[in-house]
Image 1 (cartoon, rainbow, N blue to C red):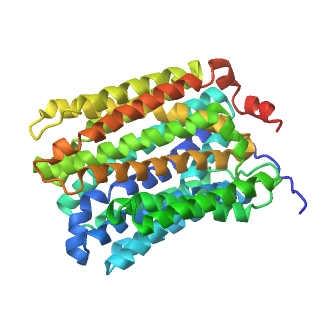
Image 2: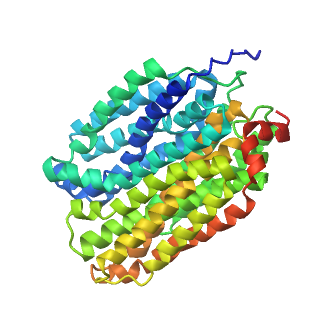
Image 3: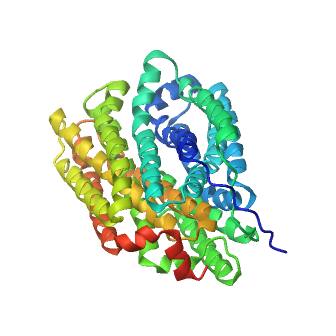
Length: 476
């Protein structure tokens, strides 16, 4: 196959670059919101569609599973065929799937539509980040933009319970999906007008075997994490899942190390900076998922709060994430990733430790203070992690860099949900607080992981060099 050169697009003006960021943030808000907004509406969905507990679990899990499995492939396809094109395809698929969700006559149809939403979401998350990275050639401006991008994504995840509770207070559960349609329409229109097309400077061979094997690995791992609490971690089905994941992972490593242009250069994970960023992304989203799930169960089942009130309790978390993420982006541009990572680890650890003594009567101000600390930690973490991972690859692979970190986030979310759900499964409303205490130790442990990640993060001079430095080290 002969490589085809593509001319680099002209850089947009400063106003145009930040307009591009705003359009991409719209898509990221949708992806993050749909990860958490449905949880608060599960009882209403169950009553409306006659779904049992297992059916309700898959209504949530189908989206996360498909999203995590396809992120790498979507990022690679966008680098090859055009990021704006794949981004717009993702918006169309996501919008159509949202309509199917809103009209779903049965739980089975809703699960299938949620899976289709995951397909569309996989074309938005890494591709939006790649578009932002390519629109911001200056490393300091890029760091600030990534801070804004991360704040919007964090806000959407944290705002899901609040938005869901507000919609359910005045409408039925189908409004949880109707809300996506006008946002998709606006994003499609703005992307057609303002977002420039970009792709890798040189077309690469598609690594179809690698993409298939990686999808199998992620789907199997996430599926076992989701189903483990229900089927048993040592059941024959779980053991078969472990074996399948190991075999597929071994096949993926073998394929990738033998291809001249692999989907993922596995040597990157030998770099402490890049692998640390990926581990940090997993840890951050384990902490966030554990916090959101335990908060919802504790406040609704133990304290008897309404869904809207339980969702509103996460507002300090959302405020902390929203205010600190842009600040973190500016810090990365000035001082490198280490200081915001240290702050992120410290605040996450403090927030988790504040709730390890949770009881059915823990004062509400203490709860809100803990959520605020966790939100601040979450806000400080995303920009340095994302910036470090993106700068760990040449610009031509920006889509894959975004996909790797996005996949790490989804794996972290799945792992957090599985662990938190397993901790409180079968607990009575009065015993749920005590059963959830190990979960808050887990949140604190995730903060400690970030402190270790900060130790391997690059210094200011290397961070400022950005992709050029990474390209020189990789010979690309």
